[in-house]
Image 1: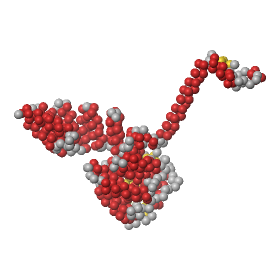
Image 2 (image 1 turned 45 degrees about the vertical axis):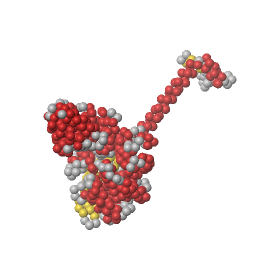
Image 3 (image 1 turned 90 degrees about the vertical axis):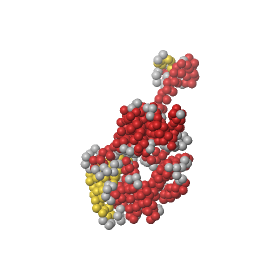
Image 4 (image 1 turned 60 degrees about the horizontal axis):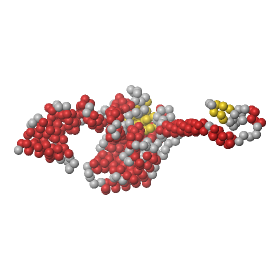
Length: 522
């Protein structure tokens, strides 16, 4: 028998006391029972110590697993960007193909930004300057931006120059020139990818199968993509349809048309237009694309987007789950998932909307819609500090983001932060000098600060721009307080004329004030 910490225990290993080796085998069960009877407290301590130790070990294992699964190794971020001044359709087509090709190669090491991730956020009058491209690439966290420029074009080929920019270097780190044969285009794209990876000290084990893309379809696709990137949806639709009329099986043309039609549908829906026939055409095009390539995650994401617009939530969930199963590097996929109820995406490992939106903007820091949605999510959960942080981060990337400034202005209005309200809306007016709501909000600030003369000027400016309804209401209030009753009556009547439905509370308030004024006059 040995002794430790004031408790007796039996040496079950027969090593503590050599004398015991000559004794008959010891009955361990009986000995343990006797010890429990004599010292129950000892066993209770052992039980709880073991349980706590087990819990600590288990927690550590689970945290280790979670951290290992959530920490993603940093991938090198790259994108091919076209010149949009000369031969824009051909530059766009080449850059778009290179991005598509690069996106299918070494995805564990590289994250390729597709053109529609960021082109609509660029300042088009500045993209010909290398300094702007370098700064823009740095803001959206690109490691390498490859500028694609057509140097010369003949009937059957063109010469392409590629300038490789590192955001932290003033000049291109490499300039390459190559010749693109319009009849044998695949070797060109393979050579460019090989040269690009060689610059990045990497290599290609094997190339994915390149989709057949007849050169007669290049121009309609290139123009369609160009107009889509520059926001001319009507022209983009025209060119995509032109290409599809030549070949209904060209997946790139189908996806381009689907994207512009979904954008068009969203706008028409906001205007209250009937869309069932329009939705039917989009759904038909998506299913046609899936017949051609059933493993294209973008098509399933587009299908999910369509079902969200139609309020068909179960079908939206199924389509987006399928998109997630196929490909996980699509920022719009996470944005669309965030529009579902949390119970529909918790099985994918996301606890809430915030996690999905953070994933979207991690993949694509140029995703303005994702930043705005994240800021609004924080705002509606009263996380005002986080809201301000998100808006300021967005404005660091895009100083001219009108939506970002307006969101920040709304936040400051709620916080009654007068200095920041004025500063923010003055910045809005520098970008959009005819934005009536900015004048109206500045009028509210000065009215609350009892600077009526200044407030009147801002309200009048808002009315001058767009006959701003609520500016009429506040002018009525200001003039009533100043006992300028004719002006007050005029503006209250104008606000009532501009009533917007039965839920228009300002119109009802104007009616009450008008009644009181007329009754007092009588």
